[in-house]
Length: 79
Image 1 (tube, rainbow, N blue to C red):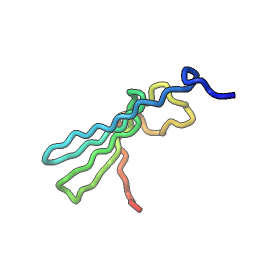
Image 2 (image 1 turned 30 degrees about the vertical axis):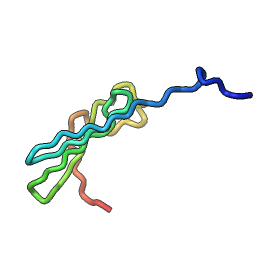
Image 3 (image 1 turned 135 degrees about the vertical axis):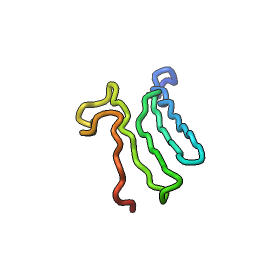
Image 4 (image 1 turned 90 degrees about the vertical axis):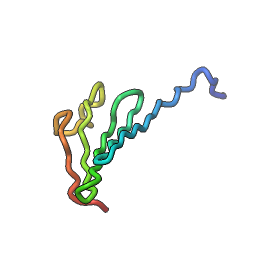
């Protein structure tokens, strides 16, 4: 049996937002309007970057990070 087009689940809306000035670049990934990842890249001091923990909303509690929303997570190593 074939699948009717009206039975198909619609694709999630994915947005990649970038805000930039002379000192910093902020990249945000949103899926279905909910922030999934926020990365702040500093331009001046060696180009270091860190993540901001977005609010979890209605996500699966087993997938939540231990850090509270709005916390900064520094990357120590990059491969």
